[in-house]
Length: 490
Image (cartoon, rainbow, N blue to C red; front, side):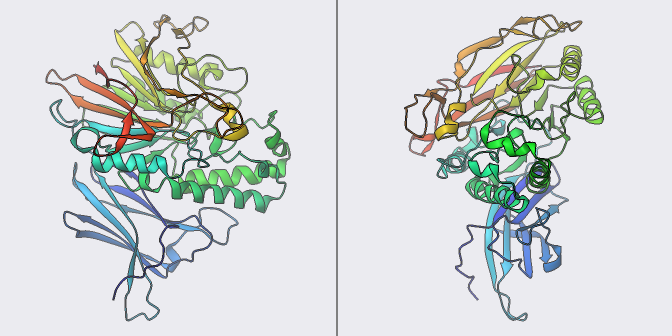
């Protein structure tokens, strides 16, 4: 029998994390209008839809992403025993038949991804490429971010196609709008769930093209989380404990059940490169940006690096002090400890981050061992609008020195940060009484590629892609940098 033609726009499939031998798939819906399928399945295939593995999902297998919600549901499935560096396809479908003996499978969502390679490609091959983005406000996006990403993935070919994606915070803005003032717990929970439903629908083509890791930042909770004593008018209700409790619980449900964020995650590509993704927002206290156990693991990763390392975090390391909101530098003890460990590292470190509403690549010496820190910031994928548009920003060549001269770190003398205007993402003029009243950074994401030279050193390349402008016969997103950023890592 033919599949139903019912719209599948409210279903989600997210390829969430991948290794050389496994992949994690999130399926379900964040919309309250759909009901749980009595029978569903997720199929993994290779080549011309040769099905290799099938995982079935029964009515009782579905989970609720949000506590105290009667609707919305998901399931995470894991496929194992895969081969490294192989392209796979995924199909999520449900049985719509009313009679058990007659199956009528309707495909709901499809995806494609590749497992991680066992080693980095040579510099004559396509680099292992990361798609990097942050800060997505859905209001005026109109599907552009996902469409641009899909175009690069599908048409970018051997040179540009992302292998995996890192979204480094503010995938949603839960604290925008005067409905944030609600004092009713059920309304707070429903609004947060609705925000995720709309944003996940808009980002769908990113989630189905390669594996995605997500790290939350403050707007997955509220501005400057966990600080709630703010002057922002729409957030004053947070001063009430009942409101704050309901908001925090719903936000954490989404971070851990929908985004599937982990406190700290490490994976390697052979002995060539090591990645560490750290949630430095969800667990903050007055004195720490990550709990002691997580900090211990983070410092151990830095100190034990046997190759260049890539640290993926929701806020940049190279920052000035901020008297208005807390950044990583606000946590003096842990900030110093992290920089101290980096100064003793025997390899270069790359930081991938977002948050600040501008895109920038910078580099600076890393202690006295002759190594360097390269920081790549990609933000935003979609700018804030209207009154909230005053929070847009343009690239800054600050701070001038790193570490700051006010911070004494033995073995890590302060040195000048290298900023190149060629690798600061372009800006757009603002216009009063428009959706964008203030000058802003162009909506973009970046790609960061890694390959291995014949001398054993790594080559890093990076490009920024304008989401709202297309170029060339293949209609790829337009490049923002005149030339790709390129540097050797050791």
